[in-house]
Image (cartoon, rainbow, N blue to C red):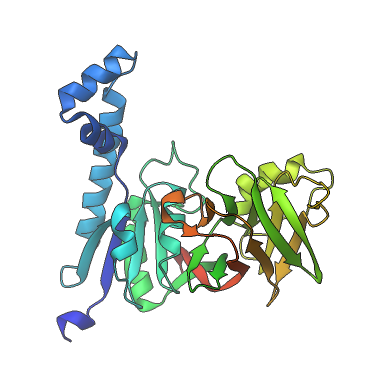
Length: 302
């Protein structure tokens, strides 16, 4: 077996709060001084940094010696090339799994929680000590998985994005978003605070808050359910804009179509990552629907 044929484990992390503080303030002592002048301490931040480092090293040691191993930071995900047979280990918060998911296409994903007492662990349900056993189970195909629905947005200028939680379409600032919406045979011009299209995974976050505020709450999808729900935020009825198409469900090949009427500031982004947004200027058409890809989340050995 050549080296390239050996299994590859890709470990994904994000910078710790400690690393971010050092990057901002230059040195540990300057970071400590800054926090102290604001009534805070560096001790807990350092402890969390060390715990993640300990977990990272333990996972690295659990990868079989002859296997390939790559450690990727969150900032490098847009340029990293995943291989179809990669085994992905995400070490961190639930949100980091969403950051990774849109770059994958069916690879096994093991969510490892470095601080179970701190993070809920919905998408990172495993202790880091279990990673080695799960990595080997993935390589042999002897694992139980949960496939989570994803959402995609395709623009008619060729741009495209995937999201695990939700897609947002609207204006980059607090200005009103202007567009034409088409759904289930109806269409109208709208002015609103933008709209989101949520999966079942996203239904426990932003979408849940919007849904609770509605006069007639919609039935939100389950995590693995092949269904999406969209919500228009604060649609404003006027002489030229309507507010009749404000929520609905999408399944199968159904699409929500949005045509931009914004000269500038129109954006489409997924999972709250505004830095990875698509431009959405006047006349561009966005079509949002179920993505063919799903997140393949490892639940345990078979």
